[in-house]
Image (cartoon, rainbow, N blue to C red; front, side, top):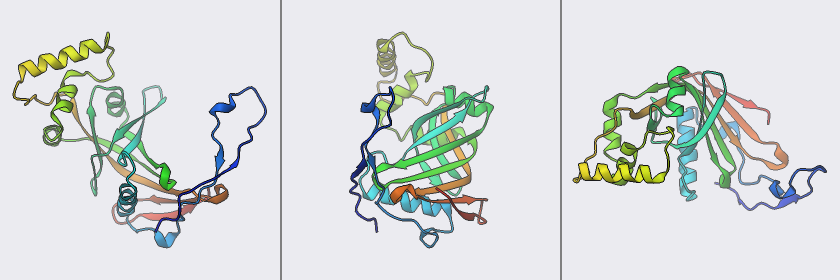
Length: 231
């Protein structure tokens, strides 16, 4: 069971210098919970599911939001938040426009990192691995399950491409509504899904005095090796 999540600032002093103190958060301690080896499931997927269930039970907004980090052709990292749509023994799935910045980066370098951060629970989960594009049939199925407004927006937008102003996008949406008055706008050919196949997990639980609990899973399939890491 999670302990009290009430935290108190412990040190509001900022180092001397010319930086803006208004941007510095007051220091606080981490007291929400603990994490020991005996608490962990042997399967990192099951452990992730336990923690996601805790986040949902705590009614956290966007509990499935995850930071997706990719690398471009010049080895420069890029990150953005996307929503997890499925997590099972095949991997972690999300959907996007495949000619977006992240889509092009994944095409050239098909490895990525995911980060879930549940601030109120003082928990992070890091997941790293190779990425593959989903079969178009899976993208079709998910696309047509989305709210109708989201489908029209996806069909109207060439994600990451420049646009003169918002009015251009709104006009495209109106034109698509006129073209498909029944709401059955087709999935754009370049809109699809990706699956990250995990090679490494890390579960992080904030602890007092920054002596955090960290556990790493490495391996795969049924042979995951679990190691405690120093904070």
